[in-house]
Length: 252
Image (cartoon, rainbow, N blue to C red; front, side):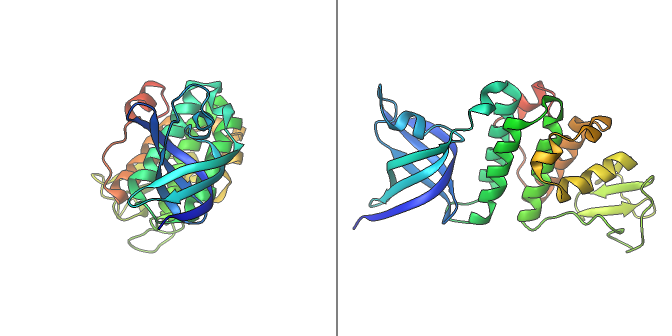
C-alpha cells in the first residue's frame, strides 16, 4: 500500500541513476534524512530537473513504494542560487552536506534541519574571506548537535580555570586543557584569538560569523582544519569526497 507524505526538505545530494532518473538525499524537517527516486528528472524540460538539484529547499510530496520513496510533486522555496556565486561557496555547501550524511543515518534526526538551512543561507551571504570560519563553525555546531560539544570554560581534566594565553584543545577528551594536562599527541595549542573564536563559533549564528570583520585577525583555514579534525575524532569519519577540493581552495 502506498503512503503519501508532504514534507519540508533540503536536497543534500543528487546523483543520476538509469537513463533519465535521479536519486536524491533529502533532509526533512518532519522525518530526518530520507532518500527518494525522481523518475524522469534528467529529461529535457522535466519539471523535476530544478526541483531535484542539490541544496534546493522546498515542499516535497513523496510516495512510499514497496522499497523506495518516489518524489512525485514539489515546490521550490529557496534554490540557494547565491551558492553559485563562487566555487568556494558551492564546495563548502557540498562539504557540509557530506559531513552531515556521514553521521546521520536515514530516518534520523530532524533537529539538524535548521542548522543546514542556516549554513546554506550564510554561505550565500558570506564575506568570501570568511568562508573558512563559517566551515569551522558549522563543524563545531554539527558536533554539538550530535552530542560532542567541546567543553571550553575549564580544563577538562583538572577542572581549573585556564589561561587564554596557554590553552590546548584536546581532541579525544572533547574540551580545553591547560598546559599541565595537555597531551601534545592528541591536542592542539591555541592562541588567545583562536580560543575566543572557537567559543564564538558555538555561541554566534553562522550568518554573523561569516560577516564579522573581527575574524579577519584569525587564520580561518587553520581553525577549519582544527574543527574538522575534532569532527573526525568524534565521528570516526576519516575523509569526505570534497575534502581535496576544500584544500585546493585553501578553505581547509
